[in-house]
Length: 525
Image (tube, rainbow, N blue to C red; front, side, top):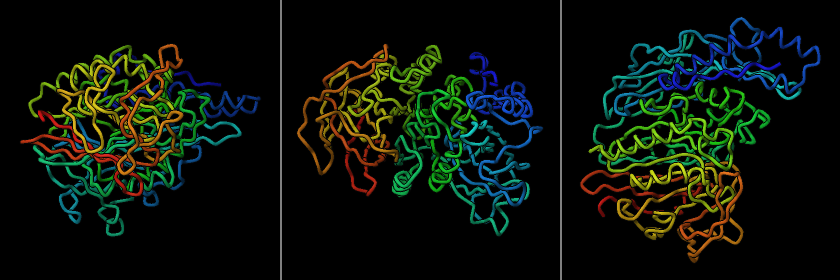
């Protein structure tokens, strides 16, 4: 017995925030979901595992007998929050979003905030977004998870705040819970210097933990996650047959909390983030788990597409599942609205006096010579816009390696950018970085292609690779733009400097801390 798919009409969704979309899906699925008694009766009558597993359910009816909770626990004082993670509101100078998880239902969740850890103020109300994942007979039981979100607005720019999260029965201001207090810093009005970090394809395990620890040393103002976040969906094809374990998210948030509780953790959607249990496009789970920036521009049916400005950098996140030729489960889902929004957003950022640099990040690769190579759908839809608006840096994941191009324009090398080199995108073209070494099992490069990175530079030359085309087939191509290649766990940090000489200094590091790449992006150099 399956629950009918419930989606949000596109024109309605475009006027709704992430929280409003979640509430819509939660209410709709609660009305559409058959009662637990009917599901169990169907199972007793010989319902198949596929019928039980096929139903997509977002939210859980309070009247239904509760399935096994995500991590156990009882309401009130015995329920300890975990998995705190931050995100910006529309303006990083004055708005922050605090999210966390609880292992059981709670009453009246809240955030306490102050400028001193021992003087937290009154309660800011938070909302609980319950997420129900039906069981698969003979595979796993049903699971309920509870995600909590609070909006902190009217903050002061450039200010360090301390916060604690709680609910009835758990007060972070109580002496026994003060160790749970964390902090964040709002964006300064005009920062002269700051650092942000990025990677994709993280997962759960020792590799991600090692990369997170190294990343934390950078004390980033924010972190960009280029998709394939935790791999609860194993196959990454956007299908209900992929194999799915929602409890991987619990482990992911516990693993990420030491960094994400203080540095806003800004994610976009990879192919493994299309969790087909939740809504027709698979994004219902993301709407429950994340409160990403509501920029006021992005098509709100697409939680992985948004923008924000931090200092002199405009950042744009995109959902590449919408344009991917390689994995077409969500191909064309916004009917061109995301691309139209991208065109407007890039134009507005380039026209903004305070913005020196535009950084775009998404999952599927524009230029790569690793396992998945390059996605022609991304190139067809967005490459002309990147070149028209002279985007400074494009960050991808998908291929589990580090790979970086020269400055590219018109499909070819406009300026070589060796290790230690520099480029001016207004003159030279855009540098593309594949940062898929965040912790998942690693890939290699095309046959016969050697690694080349700082301390191990090999001869530069042409490489035989391929790109995915609309038919879903591979088209061979020979490229010269692949400059740096490294197949270990890695991340990169970008030091941003403002006037009088604006520049981005990029340093990529392996999991042992060794630097594997460095280059600069300058305006007017």
